[in-house]
Structures are given as structure tokens and as C-alpha cells.
Amino acid sequence: MLALAMVLASCRAETVRPPRPPPPAQEPSPALRYTITYVREPEPSLEVEVVRGSDAPREFLFTQEGGVRTVQAYSRTGEARVLQVEDRGISVPEDTRVLRYRYALETRRRGRWWNFSGGLKTGEDALLLAGRSWLIRPRVAEPGVRVELSVKGADALLPWQPGPDGQYHVSAEDLVDSGFQAFGGRRCQAQLQGAVLDIAILGTMTHVEDAQLCDWLRQRAEEVRYVRSRFPFPRISVSIYPVPGREDANVFGMVMWSSPPSVALLVGQDARLDALHRDWTALHELLHLTHPTFVPRAAWISEGLATYFTELVQARSGRMSAEAVWAEMIRGFRRGRAQAAGQTLQEMIDDSAPPGIYWVGAFFSLRLDVAIRRATHNARGLQDVLELLATQGSTSTVDAYGAAVDAVAGKPIFRALLEEDLHRPAFAGLEGLLEDLGVTPTPGGVTIQPARDSVLREALDGQKASRIQ
Image 1 (cartoon, rainbow, N blue to C red):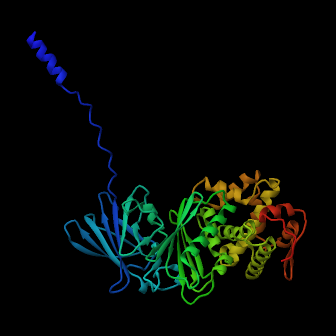
Image 2 (cartoon, rainbow, N blue to C red; image 1 turned 180 degrees about the horizontal axis):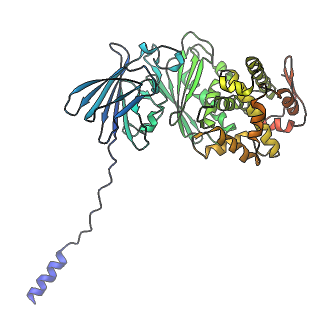
Image 3 (tube, rainbow, N blue to C red; image 1 turned 90 degrees about the horizontal axis):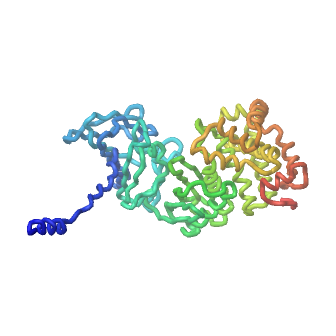
């Protein structure tokens, strides 16, 4: 009995421990770890170090040619090699652990200044440049290759959002177009419904405060919702570069298709706030976000869509009267027709020369919009095509665009309209279409009156107008 009692006591005293949960899964180490350092002496430069992890790629590429001629490669034992950049790329030895190179900024200003290859620098030690001009990347950009990137020496605004650790966690695919990148300057945010614009201000405006610049961009971004039901991306980055000695609101604007997209706006440093609000450039660049990237590039569609909706949105938002918008659109069509000088649409597409390609694309967009509204009894329009394309991914083709037009219209219309326009003089049929819409050009602008499709015109510009502009 005593022995049994001792056994029972021992059983009661023994604690049955539950099995330990498995340790939390750790994120795999990045295949590539970038450190970017902005240095000012002996010359403004970016010093780049890339640490290769296990299974890292060996083939690397610069998206844009000519910025870097040699790269230092260091083996795991510290042996250094100098690799010549050939055909924009390098192939590193298998035992390479670290790559290093320097990208000198101010010496890279060649060709068109707006390629941003040399960086646009201000006296306030702020810099704007395009990542494609200097950032090395894997030649085969697989989305599964993880990349960690950090920036030293300056506050940076990149297309991507940093993590809580301050590092940028992206993929090799994200480096193919690394967008616009701002170093230094000041920051603000424009809050939208369901979206945010992170803004870098790379210089000081003479007559406009930072808060006013931020609010100006917020208002232009809000206007995008007159084309899409919501802002197309939850977050984008915008860099504003005040150009010294300029008073005009529009010096240059551009969007880059990084992931997410990034926008650069060059404005005159001496521009006034009312001039910024009257200008169309910021709205035009933001409206590019409403359509996918067309592959291969089809500027007559992408620029045509942005140009077309830039005009209509200013009427829909009430910033301009319908008459003023139609008058401006007609002036654009006439400029495009003068540039075309009898060329067909196909010839203009082949040349792809601005500004004519913008306006011939805008005219085709108007033709499509009216055709869709006629087919659907004004229930749907071209903006519904953009909503449909948004569900199909970030890239598209001309054929997929046409299929979306046909789906929204409920019948095939795209190919017939395109074939009709391709081989006749550009802008043919303009006067008849305007007459159907009730828009009549006058020496002082336009008049708007009832016509066959005036109800469609009211849906296009969002206004019922009857006065003369």
C-alpha cells in the first residue's frame, strides 16, 4: 500500500506540459541588399553597394545606358575585381559577395534635360532624378527575388513605402522601373478618400507656401474621380521641382510606371497660386493613372485618353465652363490637324510626334465615347472602359482595349471605328461630330445649342450650358 501511495503521489506531482508551439516562421533573407548613400564631396554622387545573398542572380543590368562604366566586385574572401559595363550589363563571378559603384550626378547632364539622368539639383541641397538612370538591377527581374534597400545621407522619397524598420522591401521586378526619386527637400501629404499622395517639395516657391502646393495637388487628385469611381492607387509619390527663373506654372510633367507610379512636376519657381490652379499639367499626369500601361507603347491611346479627359474633367468639376472646355478642345484638334498636314491617323501613329499624337488620340477618344453612348442610350461611356480595364491588370494591349470598348458598348464598334480612321486624313469627320453634339465654333470660342446628340454632350462635360464663351 505504501508503495502504491508513493506511485500515485508521484503521478499527481508530475506536470504534463503541452508541446511547445513551433517558432514563428522567419522571412527569408533578401537575395539582394542595397545601400544607397548620397554624398556631396568631392562631387555630388550616389554611392551604391549591393550585397548578394545566397542564390542571388549573377547577371545585372542598367536600364539606361551610359551612367556607369565600371563596377567593383568583391569576393567572399575580399578579392577585388573591376568589371566593365558592356551593353548596359555585367556578369559577376560566382563567388562575388559585394558590388560597389559611384554615380556622379552633375556630370550626367546630356541629351534632353528631362530624362532626369543627371538629377535636377537645387541650391537647397535637394535632388530629383530617375532611378532607371543609375540603379543596377538583375537582368532577369523575377518577382520572387526579394530586395532590401536603404538610403543614407539624405531624406528620400521613393515610389515604394518603407517598412517600420525604415527599409524598402521590394522585388527585383520593382527595380525594372524604379520611378522618380527625390533626395532632400521637404515633405507633405495630400489625403484623399482611400488614397494618399506622398509629396516631395524640392525647392522653395517665391509666392506659394508648401501647404498651398500640397492642397493644390490634393484638389487635382480629387478631380480624377470624375473619371474613375475612386483614385486608382492607394498611394503614389509626387515630386515638385521649382525651376528657378520661371514664372509659368507648366514647365514639364511626367509619370513613370514604377509600382506604384511616381510623378514629377516641374513648375516655375515664381509661378503664383492662381496660375497653378488654372494649369492643366498636374491633372493630365494624374489622369494617366486611370488607364493601364499599354504594351507595346501606344501613345495615341494613352496620351489621347489623358488629353481628352483633362479637358472634360475641368468642366465636370466646374473649374471651367463647358464652352471654355470645348473651345480649348477644338483649338487642340486644330493644332493637331495643322501638324498632321494631311497625314492619315496611321501615319501620325507611326510618327508619334507630340503634340499632334496627343490631339489625334483625344479625337479618337471622343469618337469612341460618343459611339459607346449612342450604343448604350447614354448609359455608359469611355470611363466605364477604364473601370473594366482596371479589373484586368496594370498592363494592356490595343486589342484588349478594343475588346473592353466592345464589351462596354454591348456590340463590336472599336475595330470598325479604327479602320475607318486609320487610312483617311487625321481628324476627318470632326466638324460633323461637333455639329451632332451641338458645339459650334465661333471667332470668339464656341456656342452650344440643342442638337441630335446634345444630351450626350451634356453627359460628356457634365454641364448644361447655353452661354457664349
